[in-house]
Image (cartoon, rainbow, N blue to C red; front, side, top):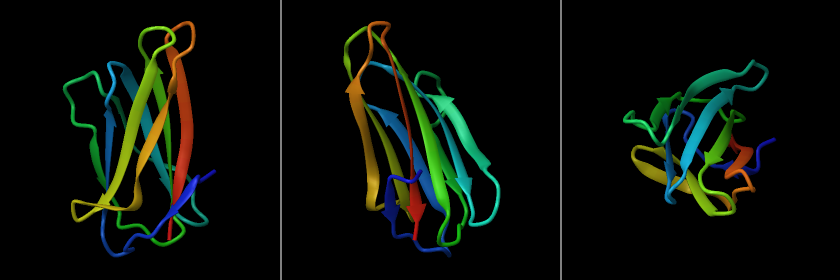
Length: 119
């Protein structure tokens, strides 16, 4: 499923930040899977609460998959923009600023599922 490959140092933790830059609620869940292992939940939440949407996980070996699901809610037929930033040592990795954007449906809802492969 990974949509892109990101070079990461396997000796350093990975930092994940979720944001929504439009007036929508973005609910999310994040997982990782090491090569040959099962899925492990990193975290879940929503941009509408008072909790930080920042997670630190790892270090992870090369070949680790990180997968996310975004569920967006807002007004019907409106443009949304959500981001997942993947960093190490507080620096966004090359290819690590992921933009998910589109339009909500007639009920004001949208969803995205995607992932990255660490190499």
